[in-house]
Amino acid sequence: MSSPHNSAEIGDIAERILLPGDPLRAKVIAENFLTDVKKYNEIRNMYGFTGKYKNIPVSVQGTGMGIPSFSIYVHELIHVFGVKKLIRVGTCGGMNENVNLRDVVIAQGASTDSSIVKQTFGGAISFSMLADFDLLSKAVNNAKKLNVPVKVGNIFSTDYFYNDYSDSQGIFSSDGLTLDRKMIQHGILAVEMETAALYMLAAAANVQGLSICTVSDHIIKKEYASAKEREKDYNDMIKIALETAIQD
Ligand code: HPA
Image: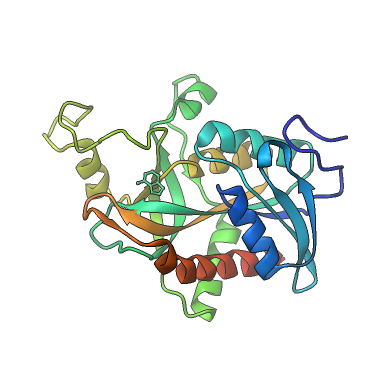
């Protein structure tokens, strides 16, 4: 049996998985970090691979960009293929002053403008989307062991790549701060487009979710890391994610 978007057979996908948005990034991670690699999916070119890291089975699956695409793959991974530990490895845009290009950010929580949360709770409560604490604390420890500085905190998962929250024509708060400044004032570190869905889907299914991102651009400072500059920091993030995924 497989699923509509994933041609893997039951048992082909490990209980521990890394989730990059870019399917080619999944291939690079599998080729550079895993041994005994087998490709289990190429429907829509959304590659998925299973291999071993330090002799423990680990999979890596592309998800595409944004909450709808991400949620399709993650739903099937959890509910059809029985995945239990899911670690997103992506990029994010820095928002806070203290966040710099190429930093590694671990999302302790995710705030969102996505309707998925409102719809799930009928608009009655504002659900807090949190990282799994066990994965979070392990990832922070592994980063220390690997000598990689990380920033840990709240991030913003948005449905809009091109929405301008600094635009006073848009939604802005009653104290005159534009929405991006309001979020920064409340400690939001960075923006990306998937983590809130991971934390919500993981919570609903009682499995473990964590999101780790490398800062690829800074939306306030208007800075962009080149692909080459990003490479090393991306690899640091992958090491943190893999070490965390294989720990019991
Ligand atoms: N916005 C949303 N998602 C992102 C960004 C951004 O600026 N950078 C990397 N992922």
